[in-house]
Amino acid sequence: MERIIGQVIYAGPTVGAELPYGKIYLNGVDESIYNLIAACPPIGSLFVTPAEFPFVRRELNLDYTRNMRGSSGRYVQFYRAVQQWLATRARETKAPKPKGVKVKSHASTSLVPIKASN
Image (cartoon, rainbow, N blue to C red):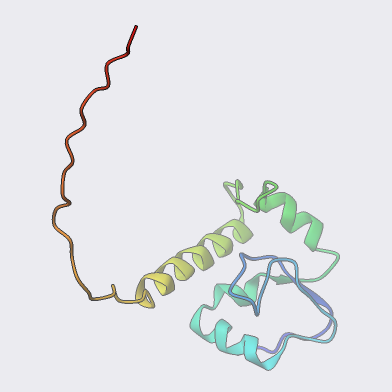
């Protein structure tokens, strides 16, 4: 795996608390990030230099809630691949449903209409 050195900015979707969108690394990325890159290689391609960052943002065409609206380009493909990996990871790590008492029906109450008095 290639080492990421120098000043870079992460231009991909947020991956937990450790890798938010737009995070700036001044001297390469932390060692913990390489575990994420090993699990999902497109993450490594979304680290760009500050000079490339405006062009990548324009290609991704993010709205104010960071939903990607871009339709073509290599960074769009990398961004979608990371989103798919995140969705797969969320399905795999989904917590089991809690076990307990299941209520099948509730006691019904009969509602009597109230007549208006004159």
